Length: 169
Image 1 (spheres, rainbow, N blue to C red):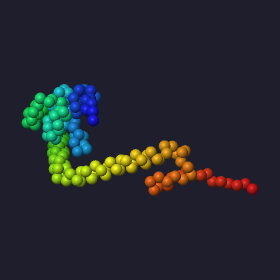
Image 2: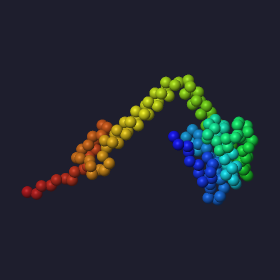
Image 3: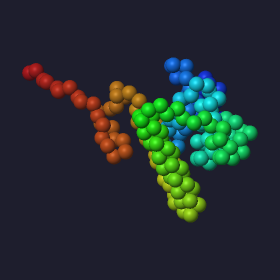
């Protein structure tokens, strides 16, 4: 798989806002977590790296490979800008979500190590499902006009309505 493209900011996990500020985001457990908005792309990238360390991401996912530990990444990361109670509430909510996602990834690693057969069975199931969908897509006509009076596909019957025939005697 090719490496992920870095955005206009030049850093992984950093997006430029219309206001000219930079937002740090990280994906974890199927969710996109916003880590905060910063004045420079470097500060946002430091915040991303601290979160990536917390999620135990590999070194090639980091923006600054010279950082060697979670403690160092958190030390170098800027504190979030908490102006009012609403900012503090959102920050606590994000921190809870990060903790939940961290715990979820940890439990998934343990589950994969403890039940490798389940992982293999799950992978085989979804590979089989994808193959079935591809074969069904190859069989299915692409346009409704290609359908005959009745076509059976995967146990379902499709067909065009035939106009009623009238005979004039």
